[in-house]
Image (cartoon, helix red, strand yellow):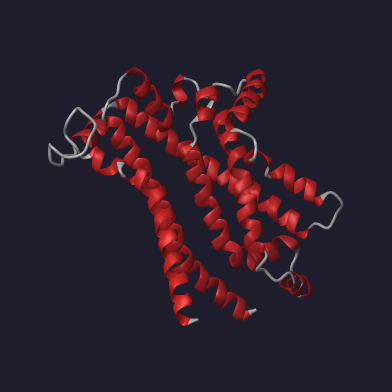
Length: 273
């Protein structure tokens, strides 16, 4: 029996490692490719160089695309986190008919192909003057990010004890203060993780940008598509590496934040209550 358990555990770890390698290797391979000084995309033969990163920073079009992506992603993160958290709390607290239908509608953008969503948003935003505006791009990215925030925050709320809100109300705290002083600190790790996910979703989104964004709203993914269409410039590998590193840093920061800061803070507050 013990040998069977050991064998099953080894198979489990092997399968998990193989799956992780299958998902990560094609993404991580762009990093060594971006350090090749040759004009031809490939590994080896020319050593390592930061030539394409220098070219990335030297070209105004790449810098502008990176700035636009960061601005849109930050605005999307703030708006999607606020709306998604409020929606998740409403669905968690609400006891009404059709709650399941409302939840299904809230996460529906995850099931609809992105190109369908892009076409629908283009038709809806064009009469409002938002088709070629940064505000329209932020709203479109928010619509994609809110369902993710709702799901993540709802999962975190399952570990929250609603009796704490009743205790706060019994002590005379109004709903807004109870949320700010009791609920928010306890679900802060989940909200932070949802915010990081919303930021990464906006930073990586490309289909809606191709439909909605104008010449002045060219994000980094759209700039990469334009370069690939015109010519295969190895600078695109530097841009791809920046996106990969940014996503890795965001996820690592979320884990560190949850384990070293937010979780101890929330635990201390819970003990104090």
